[in-house]
Structures are given as C-alpha cells and as structure tokens.
Image (cartoon, rainbow, N blue to C red):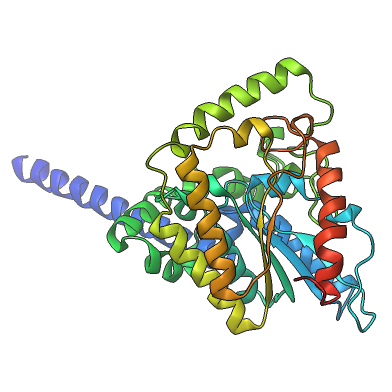
Length: 350
C-alpha cells in the first residue's frame, strides 16, 4: 500500500509538472502567434489608421503622401478631410492623412514611422509635432505598452535593455487572459458581449484619419471645460516648472526620426502644436526658453521649417486649453492648410 501511495504521489507531481510545462509552452506559442501575425492586438489605434491609409492609397495609386505624426493634440486638432485640394508643382493631387496617436511623444512618433516603412508605406512629406511637455518625459511608457516583437530593436537602442525586456515580458504574461476578448471572437464568434467589440468598431475615424466623434467634443459647456482644464493642469503644470529639461530619450528618438527621414528622402516640417493662453501661462520662463531653443536647434541642425502654432487659437477653441473642440479643429486645420501645407507641397515653404 505504501508503494502504491508513493507511486500515486510521484505520478500526481509528474502530471502537475507536465501540465505546468504545457501551459507555459502554450502561452509562449500564443505570444509568438500574436506578435508575428496579429501585433494590432497590442496597438489597435495604429492598426486602424494603417488600414484606413492603405485603403486610401489603393483608391488613389501613385498619389504623393503627406502624413502627420504626433500626440492626442493632433489626433483631435487635425482634420485632413477639411483641407482644400493640395497639388504638387507637377499637378499631382496630394493625399493627406492624420497618423497621430493618443499619448505619443518623440519615441512613439519614431516607432510609428518605422512601422509604416516596414509596411511599405513611405510618405513624401511628414509633419512632426513637437509636444513640449513630452520632451521632459524620460520614461514614455507608451513605448513598452504598444511595442510588438518587431519594434524591440528600436526600443533597445534608446532604453535600458534589461528594464525594457522586463516591461515587455510583463505585457506578455498570460495572453490567454489578457487577449481573451480577441480569442473568444476568433474561436466563438457568437459569444462576444457588446463591450468586446473589435478595435475597428470602437475607433470611428474619418476616411483621412480625422476625429469627428471618437474623442471629438463640440460646444462643451463651461463647467465641463473648467473641470477638464483643472485635471489637465494637475498633470502638466508640475513638469513645466523649474527643473524642466529635454530628456535624453526624447532627444535621441527625435534625432533618429529626423535622420531616418533624411536617409529616406522624406521632407519634414516641425510643428509646435496649439495651446490655449491658460496652458501657455503654466510654463516657467526657463522651461519656455529651453523649449524654444531646442526647437530652433533641431530646425537649424536639420535645415527644416519650424512652425510655431502655439498661439494660433483662442481659449474658446479648447476643451482643456490644449485639446481643441471640433470647431477649434476646423479653424486649426484651415490655417495649417493655407499657411503650411499648400506652400509645402508646392515647394514654396521656407
């Protein structure tokens, strides 16, 4: 009896061990499958914008491409569908598209452009937003949250290798649970609940990437604006005070992006995005001076136009003094088109 009990004990431990090994190997295989064939599960916003852009390119083959990359400011501020027709000196119609990304800073802008190039999409012109508060962010965690396996070489160039591996691995723990909504949709399409909609159904964008209903706000009431501005100040006022600096991560990724565009023959325009008078009042004088000097240095070092649009809009055009209302987005887009994009594609922007 004792031998039988021992045998059963060993057998149970062996079964548990093999079961654990099978589970681990299954999770690794699932991660490999998702990273290689479905990286959009880690960055659905990029995927929906890329799909829209590829659809427009297929509809308009051979058209020169004008892209904009930037933060949530530009996600909400820029409505390329409202632009007048843009033509090159040779008479070619230009295809404009908003490829901004919520939460993006210099590192995420670089990541997006590298992904686009890997996907075979090369813009002729690229508007690169300089979002001043992001310049002070030496973490830019969005990079790890959105990165797939193909993005890791770029991540490792700019962030600590072991810390990056740890953060990346943390996002891949138990994919059977983290990606359960996607897996259920694939395996049991009749089961998903309304909140488990595919990303394509939850990110409504215009045909050229403009946001008219996703995060867009029209005619907000004064109390809502006051509340939003209060929360914005809580997040942005402290980093804009004494001690503001240009983080090494921001500078290295910004310069890699500009070097990449130079090597690819992509014409770049640097853009300081609009801010309300209230937001502009939060900068201490040294921070504002450093941002101005850094932007001018990039412009000079790379021979690029620098557009300072920080004072283009009034306070009433914003919902929180740095994200526009839908009406403010119309005004910004019209001025950007007339003052920057029309002369840019015509070869006349200085």
